[in-house]
Image 1 (cartoon, rainbow, N blue to C red):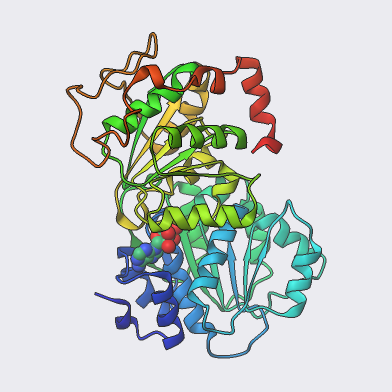
Image 2 (image 1 turned 45 degrees about the vertical axis):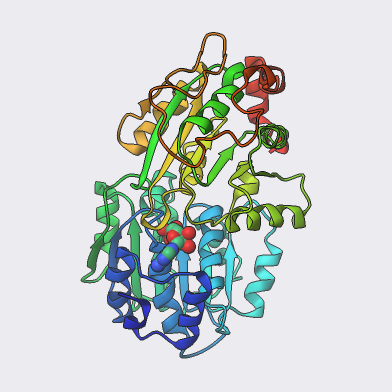
Length: 428
Ligand code: AMP
């Protein structure tokens, strides 16, 4: 099974090759032929299944013929991060075509978006609020839209966008193809889908939880023990490519330095780094120069590295959305991955929110042999030690607790400062 079977435009096949895809994922196998026939789709699929390319490729195929520089495809998504990811997929897969896409979302200036629309584009990827602003301002003409995608429809409804979506629909031609994607299908989403789709074909992949190929686990720990727990975990479990998230830029930098001192091949990725150093970190991670990348949420946006085996939340994310995004970096495209989260006693409310979205309780784990009381790292002969690349210390410093850096002083902070830190977006 390969992409040739879809008889796509050769320029798109070149884009697929450039993206490094060789075999269509199950959702792509199901959805692409149906979408190419012009049928409506009700897609039950979550992030990580390859659903973006499943709707982007048929859109690009259709738009390679016909009028240029008028908006013929509209993709509506709940968050700007998702809009940017979709846009990136369009850019990658459509690289050899002359097609243009514009992203439209709030929180940034309107004028660049208005100017880009004025210059002409065939595809608009939009979040509902800003799209309505631009419609109201007469800055966007949707009267030629042939194709509508609603992505992550359940999330849009959860975020209160249902009235906005209904308003947007009123500005679109009724004669169009609609592709509707949702990870879950509660009653209101089912009703919405029923009201806008015409004789849809249902395509459904996997179970209904964010990234089903990911195993989640929580590691309750105190702030002062986080660093040593991380070192112990990395020694005990067979990891290959690990993405670690910290709450602030400074913590990312410090942690990367400490891991480097322990002999790991590691890079930091945070907003204070110059663009070329950031790129070097991402490319190095992608190409295997680094096994570990320590990143902040913002800096990690848009990282697309296959084969991340572990995402470790050294610090709890601020929102459920951020959690889903972080763990969405592992278990991509049908691979398996682990998502470990270090939790402090004060993180329970966030844990409950995450569990609600996952629909199940996340396993709480304790690392055998790790002394949570005094944070003395156990030596590697613990009974649960599996075989793996990290079995051997990389240099003589590792595994010798006397030479461990003073994590408590570098990472510990009083609870009040932690709360403040959480609000301090500038530090990220
Ligand atoms: P998505 O579910 O659209 O967010 O895609 C998840 C990840 O899978 C992204 O990193 C894509 O680049 C990647 N991907 C999509 N389709 C394929 C494919 N056919 N082969 C390999 N990777 C893919």
